[in-house]
Length: 237
Image (tube, rainbow, N blue to C red; front, side, top):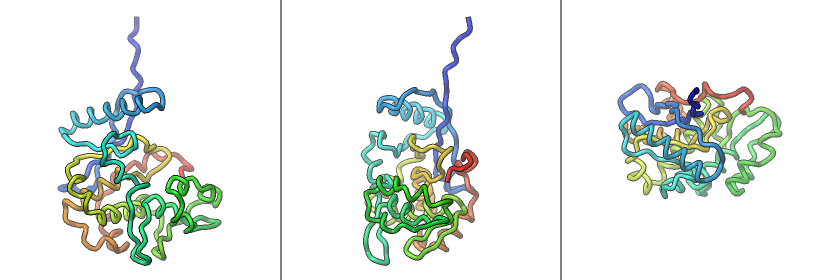
């Protein structure tokens, strides 16, 4: 009698790097597939994922960023909670609001009214899917192209975290980051990846001047990229 094969799935882990050509090293980790979307199933997935990561890499501290994390640090690091202070008007906006409100499309945008919407509402605004292909980003006059795919989102997240210094000491204790809510087939922008980038830049003492988009772009593109771009399905935008 043949033994039943246990179904598996792969989840990404993002690891900050200090002594290599990468700021972030991304790896896909294979774990047992837990059927269902219940909180209990997601926690099983997180526990399995972190157990495999710790065994494979010898890490002690791995942080999950999704709402099912169970770690109180995950909430202030979420893009819907973490805020960036805009120098132009002195106001604070969540990373999620700033990102969605900056998108430019073939037939509209940026939709700056999304800056003041509830973060989850801003993410689901119908104009973001009915305005054609995305062409770039405009954040208070700072215009960004689409390449590299994550650079604008990373700039927002890294600068927001840089401003929130009370989170730094605890964040720097972690060796890897995960987000089970992130689907690498349908998206490329992941706060766990951006968080790993912040840790790498902080430990390399490279955070000086990154508020300037040109400085950040030149810095990040000077390293080899390791993300989940190769897993994206056609039409993900």
